[in-house]
Length: 145
Image (cartoon, rainbow, N blue to C red; front, side, top):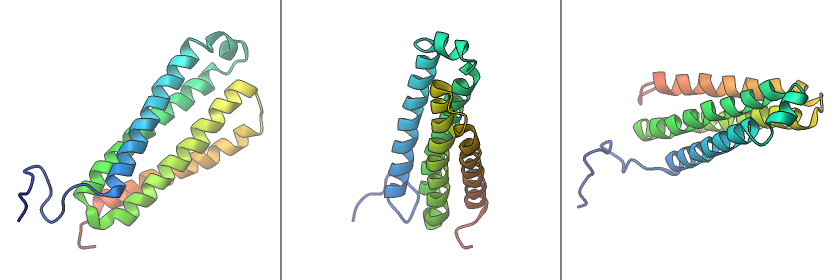
């Protein structure tokens, strides 16, 4: 018989591949957001301001960080609600894809000025909203439903 860690949820060991994936993806996105924000504020500042794209770059970095933290929170929720992993995984996929499309397209738009990317950004926004709604549903549901 193995001893249960005092901080684990009874009935499982507390760590699942989903938990690990969400937390790793979230921390990597967080590092990307910090690096991108710093690069935009220092290395690209003159270029972004000259092109009127500093706000787009800052928004891309900010939303990347918001959803990095959301992914880490989903990893924790996956530990607390292991039977809801399908909904949590769907939320995580929406956050990852949404961040890639939303922040990625905004950052590329800020660097290149390719206007068509502005039409793609809302697709990322819809994915992010879907992720939040799925996360809310997973958090509100009980293990029995």
